[in-house]
Amino acid sequence: QVQLVESGGGLVQPGGSLRLSCAASGSIVSIYVMAWYRQAPGKQRELVAGITDGGYTNYRDSVKGRFTISRDNAKNTVYLQMDSLKPDDTAVYYCNAVPYGGKLLPSWGQGTQVTVSS
Image 1 (cartoon, rainbow, N blue to C red):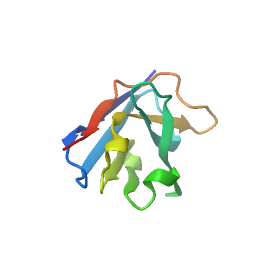
Image 2 (cartoon, rainbow, N blue to C red):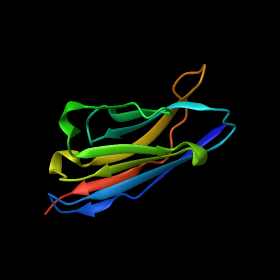
Image 3 (cartoon, rainbow, N blue to C red):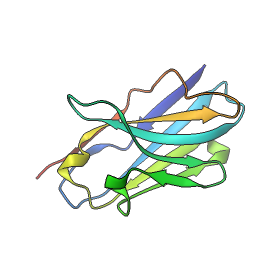
Image 4 (cartoon, helix red, strand yellow):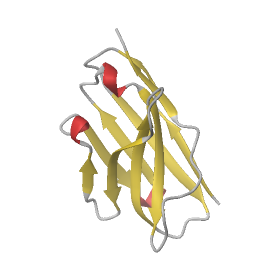
């Protein structure tokens, strides 16, 4: 069983920044991809950014140039630096992972709330 614990959310004004963290623990052999998702009220969960253990990254178009994903492989931790935040970024942010030879983990953490408002 793998546990995912997100932290770092909060209330920030438009144009502000936040840094999210997510630590994976438990029965982990090796993680290939770690990723951030978000879910706004009344909307489906969407992929925000992902990163492989080799450092290859991908982002959804709406956050390119504003968000930066990074990870510490030794700590099984992934980060999301969010700059130039917009009200549309308001959501609960979750992380997840894909182990080598496996699929996206079936269980999700509690998420961390990000609210962008003046």
